[in-house]
Image (cartoon, rainbow, N blue to C red; front, side):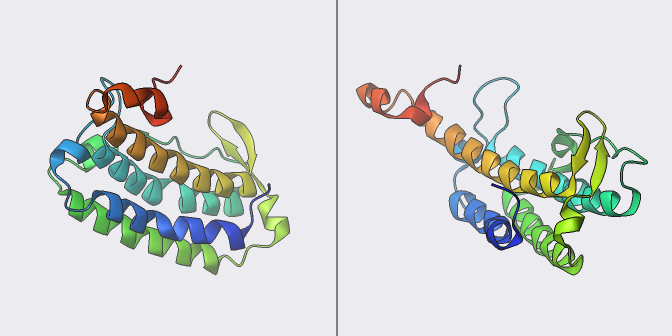
Length: 176
């Protein structure tokens, strides 16, 4: 399936509400839980999504439209949220993400992109030549990937508590 605005924007617009519905006002046991060393909590994921909103999706789309493949994108710091989120409440992060996403989608709409624009290419610093359509489709898949990560991380807090039912719950099984 290729990127289509009419299918992608409704998904992108719902991500902040989904996160707020799952995470707002939960005890820290749920929102600060990880899957072990080197993994992210739901709190960290929201911070990461904020950083991506500020430095990745729309800025790189603009980069492709202005510069094409002449200059690579600036690198993306996947862990910048650890410093940027320090000391902030989850509620504040959810509010920030919601406002940034609303702005990003308005900016995206303002580009008035055509099918030809979606074929325009930019230069990713690690992946090489990519199209604007691929970049925007990745935005949608990135959201879904992190929503799944939040759910999995939270569910795994009850891995032992479910006892023998663990055999029926794929979300609790270790990734291989």
